[in-house]
Length: 608
Image 1 (cartoon, rainbow, N blue to C red):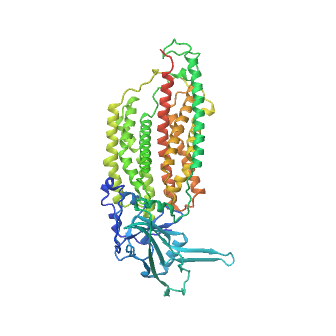
Image 2: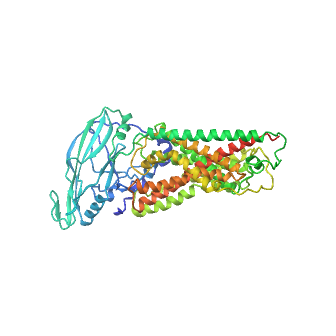
C-alpha cells in the first residue's frame, strides 16, 4: 500500500538542526521528573504493515485526528535513520491524573478516506506512539475472516484507546495502549447506516475518544528497560538460547582441536623429514624434496592486484575494530531499548573514526610489498565499502521516497552523513595511510624469492578455489547459524536483542574458526606445491559472506512474511552489504592467520 496521502509539512526536514552535537549527547539517558498535573507529551510517530518492519509511513498520512499545525520533535541521527518522525498529538495527558472517555476529535471521512483506512487495516497496519521515550504500539483497526459459505469479511476501526501508564515517584516507568472491551467502528463497503456513527452523502462521521489510567510501579526508573523487555506488543520469538550456543561451542572446540592436532602432527613429521639434512641454503632446489618446502623460493612472491588486496585487508581490519567496539559498548549498557536508534548513531560515528585503521593497515602493508601507487591505494581503500554503500542506499532511499515512507532520509540528514565522511572519515583514512606508509618496515620474508616463478603442477579437483571457498565459508557459517537467526529477527523484525554476552562469544568463535580453517586450507594448498596462497586465503574464509546472503534469501522466503517492493529492496540491498562486510572482515582475519602460519613454518626449517 502506498500511503503517500499528500506530503508532510516541512517541519520534519528541520529535525537534524542540532545533530552536530551527536557525540556529546548520544548516550544520555536522564530521567524526566514530573509533578502531579504536569503535561506528559505524547508523540505520534509512524504506521506501517505488520509484516514489513522497514516499510513505515508518518502517522499523519492516515486520515486521523491531527492538530491544525503539526509540530515535529527534534530527533537524533539514529532516530531519523530508524524511520522515526515524531510529532505532537492532540492527546492531552497529565501526570497521575486519570481520564475516562475524553473526546479527541470528530472526523468526517470521505469515501476515499474510508477506503484508505480499510486498505490499511487489511494490510495489518500498526501505529507507534512515544511517551517519555517509551514506544506505545497498537493496531489501527480490526479485521475478521470467518466462514466459507457464506464468507464473512469484517473490517473495523478502533476509535477509542485506553492508555495504561505506570509511574514510580515522579518518573514514568512504562506505558501501553489497549482496546479491551472496545467495539470497533465497522468500515464496510457501500456503507449505508452504521450504528454509533453518522453517515450521510457518502461520508462517515466518527468520534475518537481516549482514556488514561495511572498505576504505581515498584520498579525504579533505572530499571524501567526491564519492564519494556518483559512486555511485547508483538509475538515473542526470541528466547534465551544457551543450549544451542553451547552445542555450537562444543562442535567448534572439537573442530578446532581436530584441525590443530592433526596439523601439528603433520607439521612435526614434515619438520623431521625436511631437517634430516642440514646442508643446503635457502636457494637450494633439492629435486628429491616435495611438498611445501620445495616452493620456499616462491611462497613469498608478491601477488597480483596488490592495491586491491591491501584495501581489502584495511577495510576488513576497520570492520573488525568497528564490530568489536559496538559489542563492547552494548555490553556496557549503552544501547538500551529506550534509546531510539543509538546503535545506528554509534555505528556511523565509529565508522568515521575507525577509518584511520583501514588507511593505516592498507597503506602500511602496501608499502611492505613494494607498492608504488600509495595515493591510489588510499582512494581505493576509502571507497571499497563506501561506494557500494552509497549505490545501495541511493536505490533503497529512492524507492522509499517514491512510496512516501519515513525511511527516506531528509536532505539535511544526507548532508550530515556525507559531511561526516568527507570531513572525518576520508581525512582520517588519508592520515592513517600516511602514518602507515612512513612507519612501514620490511616484509620480513624468511626466504628469498627467485626472479622466475616455479611452474605449478596440476592440482586435483578438491584443491581448486571453488572447493576451498565452499569448505572455508561453510564451517564459519555453521558456527554462527544459530545466532544468525536471532540477529535477523532483531534487525528485520521487531525484537529487542539483549544477549550481547552470547553475541561476543559467537563473534570470538567465528573469528577463531575462520583463522584455523584458513591455516588448514593454506597448508593443503602449499603441500600441493601451489604458492598462490595470497588471494586464496582471503577468498576461502571470505566466502562466508556468500553463505550469509544465501541464508538471507532463505530467511526472507521461509522465516518471514515480508513482501512488496519497498521492503524487499531494502532487505536484499542491505543483506548484500552485510555479506560484503563479513567477507571483508573474515577475509582479513584469515589472511593474517595464514601469513603468520607461513612465516612460522618457513622460519622453523633449517636453511642455514
